[in-house]
Image (tube, rainbow, N blue to C red; front, side, top):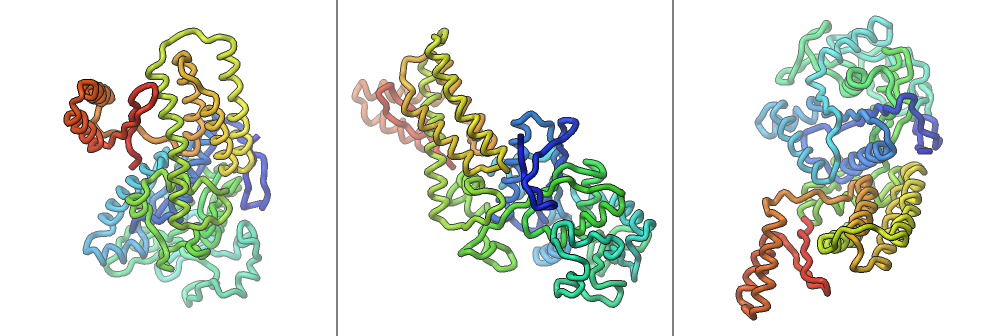
Length: 469
């Protein structure tokens, strides 16, 4: 039974759904820049949760939004001399480049705030009608004190405690300093839409409630986000959604810990961040994915170059095992398995069980990776040549199905280099070496190297693999 920590209750709980469908809403990026490793960790861990639910047989409906209009985007548009819509299109495309590189699967739907203005206006109108919101000078604010549970859901503070704190915006046009904006009156030069309250644009928090409602319904199973979004963003989502819909918004809240630099939270505001794009040019994407899943998702994790280098080396061990098995399978023949061979393959089930036990324990990816390496170690010490092809293919599948859940399975390279053509070049090189035509053999090896192909001499012949990017 899968158990997950619920930020709403502060407990690890058994995760259950009634119809085998899991409805997940995940907070996506504000698309005004490349995303950094801290953001990336959240996206990768949301994706790992989704992959594991699918691994367990659930039908997952996964929604991850793009915030494509806000103050930061307006500022970036002014800096680059383009429209806010052009900024959004540019950085949404850049998001997908990096997310695809990190093996983050595309969501069931990636809605944008600007594509859901009608739903946002309808939700705000409903809140006004029910007395939970009010218009003031073209703005619309949520009346926080109309929702007595405000603050207690995720922040675990009462309204009175919040009112006496310093994390609130004081404004003459609001009934209460705690009230937050649902709709903002337009300012010169800003994108705006017509509404019952005049020209304006949505506040940040309301877009997520509107899009979750449209694509997943009034109540969802899991809401994902970074730890820093608990307050005010997620607390506000709970208040406005539950007041509008009259039911619990999300049953389980799944929050990801920070990535730190020198033990301080990585963030754009502190200018201590590293973008995934820049680091991928140095290490490749998959080592960053390994870095993300190597620690428990709720724990902070410290970034440093040495850790990424270790991740790269660990990945190479995994991928080398797969390369070896596929090489052996390529040179093996089909044949029926003996009882001994069947028992040999069955003996590896224990590692899948250990992997699943770790993942069931609040998505403990660190222990799951340990199970993967124990599986690989056992394969490396026990595998022999001369087995039927099925043996090698079955073992490769046992590794692949587990690292696929973690997002560590390398994608097929789309280089245009056909495997058969590579094999033909290797055979040509082998023939040249037998003929002692060293110049031709070296030239072919250089050609293969330029194609990103690494050759390894083994007792069973030449083995090749594509270099990690």
